[in-house]
Length: 476
Image (tube, rainbow, N blue to C red; front, side, top):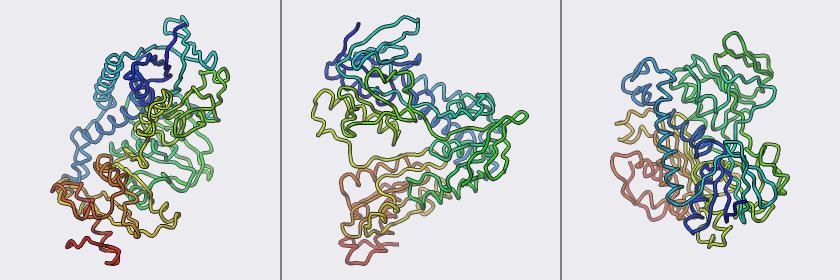
C-alpha cells in the first residue's frame, strides 16, 4: 500500500490546481486519472475542444468578415469534419503536453487507472494493465467532473443520435442538426453550427433559456440566432426521439415532428461518481451523481478529510471556478491561511456562443428583486470606432449602477471579445468601483473596451444631476 498526504481523483482543472498547490508546499501528492491522458473533460471533450471548434468555424467560414463582404463570403467553401478536427487535435496535444510538464515539474505523481473507495482513507486503483494498487491518504479530493446525461429512453447510436461528447467526433458536417436542451452547451453548439450554415433547430421544454443571464442580453442573442436561421422550439417537451431513414426524428408533445440528419441531446450532465463506490467512505451522490458539501467555503464533504471540487459539485461548473475551488480546498485541508486567499465575491461567466456572451455581478432582474434603486447604461458595439473597423453590426455592453452609492452592480456583454472584455468590469466590481472610474479614465482608442466609457456615460446621462455626482464630463 502506498501512502501519501493528498490523493486527488481526477486531473481536470480542480484536480490539477489542487495537486500542484499541495506539491508546492512539499506534500506527497498522487493524482488518479481514469483516461490515458491528463486533463479531464476540460481538455478532451469540453472547454478546450469546443472553443477550438468554435474558433476554427469562425475562421474557415469567414463569419467575422461577412458584415463587409456579404453573407456568401467564405474563406473555405467546403468545410469538412477533418478541417474542424485538425486544429482541435493540435491544440489538445499541446494542452496535454503542457499539463504533463506542469505535473512533472512540481513532482506530482500521476497514476492512470479507475479508482474506487475501499474505506474513508483508502482508495484502490485498477491500473491499465489490470493489476490493482491501494493508496492510503490523509486527505482526499474528489474532482472527477461530469459526463453527458444519457436518458434510457433516448436511443443513442453515436452517429445520428448523439451527446455533446460525440459531436466532436462526427465524420461529416451535417446539413441539419436538432439540439435538445437550450442550456450553455446547447446554445454554444447551436450557434457554432449555424455559423457553418447548418440548419439548426433548438428544442427546450421551458419558455426561456439561460435564465441566470440578464434578460436584455438574452433577448438580443435570440434575435441574432433567429436572424442566422436557428429555429427555436421552446415550451414543448420531447415526447420521443428515434431514427428515421438515414437521419433522426424528434416528436414533441404537441405532435410536431422535427427531422434532421443528426440529433444531439444536451439536456444536462451527470457527476462521474458511479464507479467510486462512495458507500465505502460514507458519502452519497444525488440523483445526478453530484456530491454535496458540508462547508461550501472549504469544499469539505460530510467526511471531514474528503473534499470535492469542480463540476462534480454542480453549479457554476466552469473551468475557471473549478481551479479556484481545488486551490481553496487544499488551503483548508493543510491548514493554510485560506482567509487571505478566499474567492472574490464576483466571478465572470463566459458563454462561447456566436457571438460570445459574458457577465459578472447582478443582472437587472436580480437588482429589481432586491429592491435596489439603479440606473443602467448601454453601448452598442457599432457605436464605437473599433466596432466599425471590425464590421460589427451587433454586440452590446450593459452596465448597472446603484443610484445610492453609484457603485457598479453588474456588467453584461454580448458580442465579439465579450469573454475578454468582462475582466475590466470584474476588477471594478470586486474593488467596489463606481461609475466615476469609467467616466473619468482614458481608454485606448479605438478599442472595444471604450464601450465601458460609452455605457457609463449613458447611465450618467439618465441620472439626476445630484445623483450623477462629480463627473461633469461633456457627453456626445
